[in-house]
Image 1 (cartoon, helix red, strand yellow):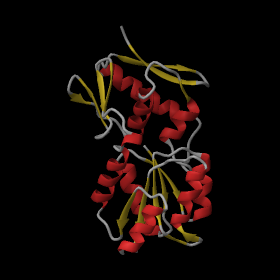
Image 2: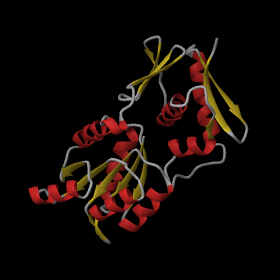
Image 3: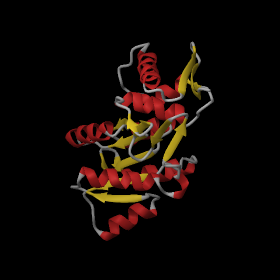
Length: 224
């Protein structure tokens, strides 16, 4: 899952990025409306977490701009302004949910999961290939009922490949699924993650194999 976080408070932004990353989310971070608009135009995101009080204006003004460009990303608004009128304004601007500060991280995560379960974003909660199953809600891969011990980035690679099982996934798409903007990424970073994941799947006898075409991408296929 790729999240665009728009929050200008450094401490809160750092804490949110850490929490989201621990739950296998790739986080792009913007501190104002201009930067958020640029990132949203450059990358596709599964959800937008948007603060209202930003240095260059009200975060709500970003939503109509995105919608006008056909960007239907679900939006969760964070704000200290929790009066009913403020909530109504947020929803009327196109926000999908509204969470008042201060809030518990557990509630934020639950609301994000709820947004992604809505009809426009509905997807099967379990993806299967060979003897491998992947629970999209719990971010958990299993083979024959045994949970695979995967790192966060290995999990992200596996999810991206499983969503297009049997088809080539371009390197650019995998890079976008695994690394956030601003991450320091070595040239062979993606290949390293894929290699480690491939070895774990083979050792677990998952009934799948990851094949690659140098410079093009990777595909996950079921083995006979």
